[in-house]
Image 1: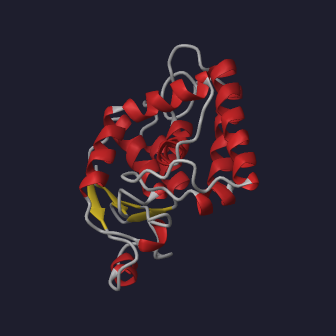
Image 2 (image 1 turned 180 degrees about the vertical axis):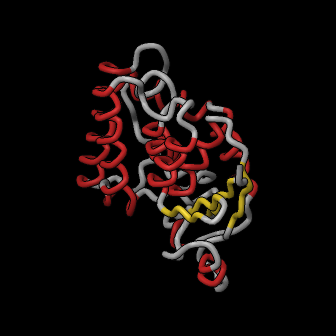
Image 3 (image 1 turned 180 degrees about the horizontal axis):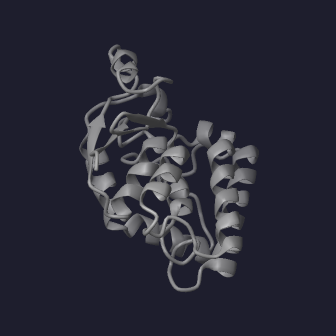
Length: 219
């Protein structure tokens, strides 16, 4: 079988890269990693070698190129159907796909006002009424999923699924910006942060030296 290669951006900043990387690590897939620092004079040319959109992440598998984080996860779910990418029950899978798509396309104010920055701490910054409304929606999703589908484990649907990978960057954001969470959401966030794969990502992010000044908006 052809070797998997995942092209990602800076681990400190690239929320989209984190999603498939975390899923692949959680499910024990072996893959090569190509990291392209973002926002440099060389970034566009380097990305053009791998990505038709000049964006990350990109999965390379033999002659196939798959771009977009959710598309990568869905492709891998088909390629490795024996792994627990989605919940086994139809209703839970439908909801998991709904909330994953909602994260994929929504929450623009949170993205803009609270960009992912793993190694920094900006408690209380970025909170606007629009951001607060989006945070309320996210925490509502987490509570409902834990209540309705969370038996058998500590993730949104019990065991780790693609849905958890999609929300992992939000967990990081909430820690960076000191967002206060209720007991259910706090426990979920702490569980995600404690994943060995997540700890590996955060450690690597802390060791990166590149600084994207547009993302260091409060320094």
